[in-house]
Image 1 (spheres, rainbow, N blue to C red):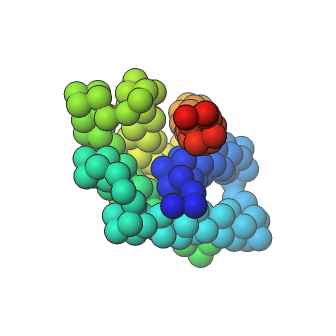
Image 2 (cartoon, rainbow, N blue to C red; image 1 turned 45 degrees about the horizontal axis):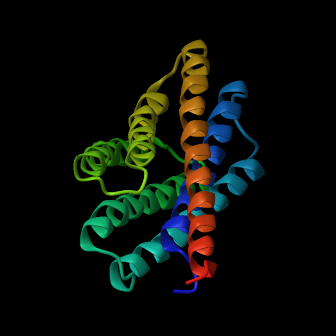
Length: 193
């Protein structure tokens, strides 16, 4: 492979989490985004979901890594791509996000189980931080359901603040792990043998 699929996946998930945190935080401050702003965010999430879907197919069909890693990381990447694609389309079309939130909530169940598997079977060089990524992603999935059903503006603001902090933590952890993986793979490739 000419690229590191998992590092690219983490970059997509991290950047999407940060963008979603920004979207949620600013949408709670304003009643509605302009149509152009909604379309722009929708396009970003659609692109992230589409790229993640391509990487999912690549991982399942061509990536030479053990099956247990494909099972954990590939499955979660597939769920992320579906949520990002459907969420991006809903935002672009300015439609109801509640159905997408249900998909996020269902994905949360698998995300928590993935964290458990990573810790139980040591499926990472850094199992604690990898499990933290899955736990934060799971919390984000559950939080989407709550956020999409809140109607009280004051409650929505405070919850969006907590939700955004979780998303920013997820994003930073994913981006840091992605950058560390890229650096580590380059370092091991050029190390004297």
